[in-house]
Image 1: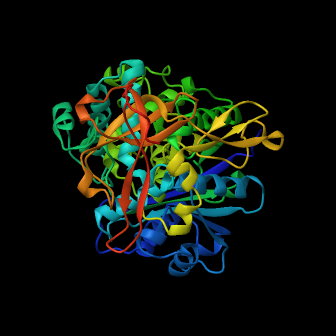
Image 2 (image 1 turned 30 degrees about the horizontal axis):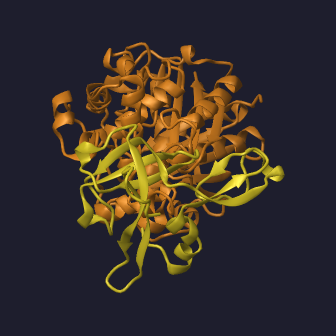
Length: 386
Length: 140
């Protein structure tokens, strides 16, 4: 499947963290305004809005948020649509925006992702996040989201000899990257010893294997290549888009240590872009837990299946390594406002390709984003080029 | 999560007695039951089947930070058990300590209380698994 390429002409973020003084719509308006200013467009140029959001209904008891954010951003009457696929909501919103522009339906669209997670207790956040799993046959029986990934981690260690230290190396690397990202929630280093010694959440995963609870928003402006020329001389193009689905319950997967949705989404995106894993210089991947980054880099083909642990430990995914993975700090250290994450990943790769990533800048011509819903029931991959 | 009585009641045969379905077209067995065989689709021929509650631990974890309703059970073992008849289930492992469970361990199903739903809500029962005991009758 060949696609008309789509330009990213503007990007914007809020700070990620516990943002008590900002509401859900405040966050969207701030990220949106940043993206619109960056793109050099005016509100009246916007043909449509796509919003990634996992669970406004549970986090702030607000549904119908497409209307809310369009209203608050002063973008009415442009059509606004909310997209939900748990933690992959943002990635799927990007995809819907890409499809809308590539099809010729719209010339300029805004894709936003927002999550406001800290207005409720962490217990209720945990309850909400597990709704991404099978409620009746996983959650109801006492399963938690860290628990689901712990099951994968234990089996990965068993099948491939992955070590606890190798898992910790993901957290250490991503914290080191976040230190150089002004938008990140955790701008400090952690050591392997600290990761191993932090509170056990679900064996073998500790607190420092887990991404945090985060408020935040991200926004991008997409345009057709012709339209993009009116606003910028140096757009970044989305040249590949893949999405795939797998079972919602981990126990229904043929192999729980392999993300088949990631593999299938990557295959589609690589084919569309005419690229392969060897062409990717910088990647933002879904590291909601340290084990998830190993599944991601294996499924995306950056290393062989089962080799993610040693590949990470030897520094191949560090900045300036074979492939720079999660230069932003990833979900682990930049923070994980679930519905915003997939959009924020595109923001980071665009900054890297434009050479605007500051202290964490790497040498990159081709980038990739990878966003996962639940334990791997949904995956979205995008490929971006200068 | 909590579950209203109708939602729980709809699947009591599976929750109490481990009923799944078997596809007569391709011989695949599914648990929990499905309405369509994902391999055969419109050629699906699904029949109810009571599964033998025996299997082995594929992977496990120990939950230390529990969801609502399970706070008093921590630390508790959650596992994916591969049943001898094929399907895999997410389940608690009971009657053993966290450091006694291991991958490949033979387990068998038992009928246990799963949780309560507040002070006045229903009490939910269903299957859990424990280390296999060759000398005892199966409880599910």
